[in-house]
Amino acid sequence: MLLFYNFLLALYHLSIRIFSLFNGKAKLWIEGRKNWQQTMSATLQKGERRIWIHCSSLGEFEQARPIIEALKNHYPGYKVVATFFSPSGYEACKKNKLPDYIFYLPHDAYKNAQEFISLTDPALAIFVKYEFWYHYLTQLKAQQIPTILVSGAFRPEQAFFKWYGGLFRKMLRCFDYFFLQDEISQQMLQSIGISQNVVISGDTRFDRVTAIAADFKPIPFIDAFKGQNKLLIAGSTWPGDEAVLKDCLSSLPDGWKLVIAPHEIDEAHIRKIKQLFDNQPILYSELNENSNGADKKILIINNIGMLSRLFAYGDIAFIGGGFQKGGIHNTLEPAVFGLPVIIGPIYQKFVEAKRLVELHYAFPVNDAAEARNVLEKLVNDNGTREELNLSIRTFMQQNTGATRKVMDRISTEKWLK
Image (cartoon, rainbow, N blue to C red):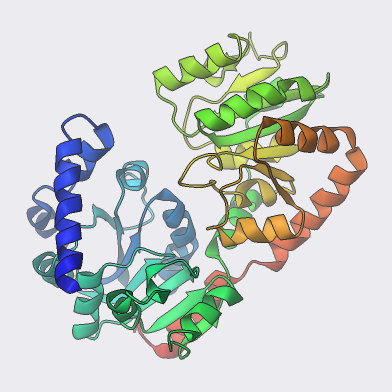
């Protein structure tokens, strides 16, 4: 099975190299890993004590942030090394000052894992949510480096729980502790004989979005654009989401406006969105003291980093990604401000989204017609929205505290001195 695993990884690596000839993200994936040994050797300072935190992409980094902040507060003698698998995560975070070092994770191979762990020499390794790499995990186990999973989430369809999943189950047994998001994940681990050192701690993203809300900084141009109107905030949208929003526009009566913050903000995509909405929208970059967009119904956010604060101005949220394979983006960012959330049909991989749907705080739709029905009900019933707002805020507060549980265990186990 290990030979097959290595073969698949080699095939994947080869395909990325081929794609890099004409795909920007694939090129970043390859370029970011070139001469990684020399880069790390020249960057890491001798004599440091370090903690390694691995994130797949940007979403997992948001889950890691509360942990990193707590580690730096409680264990200032350690440096934090953050690694990313995806270019979208690395490129978005490479200038972030919270971790002391940020690298791409080298391709999972026996020699790479040996060299990376030797260079990093972590006192503790933390994997966030998922991303299980055989050679890294077995090397950590062989070197007796404590390894934990935070905000873990498991589902029956994953390879760990299949007849052919022996190699993947071996990866799980390399972990010293599991901090899980929900009871289903715990039951799935129990089904394969993993019941020790497993705790349901919750999702650290609840802590993250709650901290963002508490540290809210106003956005003056959004205030001016909104005026006395209500706002539908559409965040992290893809073309499929934007087509649904276009069909829903008629469901927004006078006194309501639409703000679209697309996932991709390249010029070509922004231009397509404007054309889709008959060139009605104004861009955020066009707003100024003399033109605040007050006379416009649609605003497109063509920058990065504002979305989490935007939801503070919203009344209803639409979260993108649910009409494509990868699934929806972060539903907790609008929820922390009490917004009911409309999402596409692909959300089952996300524990927090499933919980919001179960509580009728989030509303999955299969097409534009269903989206219009949900939107019209929420728009026309102010009392329902106010009740939802209070209930959702309460739910969010009740689910904070995952970071504290992780830090308590790190202290109890004395993994860090």
